[in-house]
Image (cartoon, rainbow, N blue to C red; front, top):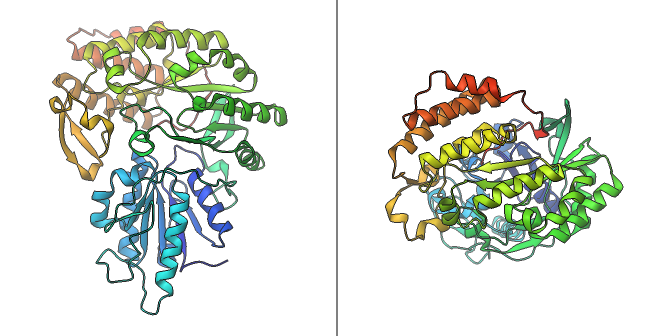
Length: 483
């Protein structure tokens, strides 16, 4: 194996599963003849010694939480090993590159990042092979800087843009990752099963305005060959995994592809279960596939409901309505697949009344157990490049860029909603830390919302909780969802 002074691949947070992106990069680099070091700081220690040996440090930032944690790691790397080249890759890398170039990173890659990253590795190796070449730093271009012509690689000197071209996919390598027992499990019927993760597609053909995928992929998506997906699943099953999360932004972007993979999985491993994320409109359009999906082992489906306020859904261009949401809940009950909605109930267009309507809907349908309490606190994030920044009404609520927090600030037209968000966020964080009963937490949230609307409580939340009945035990992952 050869290596340009040491490649260090780091993941900080990937929703409680083995870091898929690191598994991909490991396989790709091994195939190219390199021997990277892999560290997942979510479950293992990153030592000073490991940092000192690295010449290239690549940090995966597929989501906002991962970005914030990744910046902390990068600054530590910079202080210990100032000559290392630090690269961020993933959805949030390019969106926040301007700020990150100030003191954190040397390069950023977005989109289908594998080929640009390989070209970056080759460029760094070439520079370091020159007689006067040393590791690039952020102090200037004279110290062995990489050329500005690497397509898909953005540096302080050049904007490579998103690399949206089909990647020659290979099977991820998982042997060098922490074992699956370090990560989330599926809790079902009183049992805890090791849970794995893979993806069948990249990008998304939809362009919901609040989604970070939209400014990067702009409606493009790519299918990963079924044989590669199945080989990756097989490698995880050999490590003891008994449940698979399909982490595609939308599993039914290519429904024929999704069904081909789940049929093959069930035929070879009939006892293995899985979950997937599917849009409301796709659940309705492809409803004929749902009974079969259930028979193939689907334990639950996640769907980005976001809100029951049709005005909100129009502003986000979600492609569904509140009536569609009600219909999907009925449909999923019929096919006996639990629907676990993800929510974003704090946006400039949500109202206090519609927030309470959402809570009433959840209570009346007896679906409190379907939703992790944190979802009732999720507030719209507006990273640089968000498609919402240029919408006609943005001047009414958009405020300054908080670059250090990687988002534009915004203010709700109704001050009660901003105050409610702060209270709900504190409540759910404390409840999660205390491992409180989610149903009880829900009614505390509802009590706060009613109080914001000037409703008298008089112990209302306790009475509602007592009248809700015995909580349902639904299949779910033990990692609470965060963005």
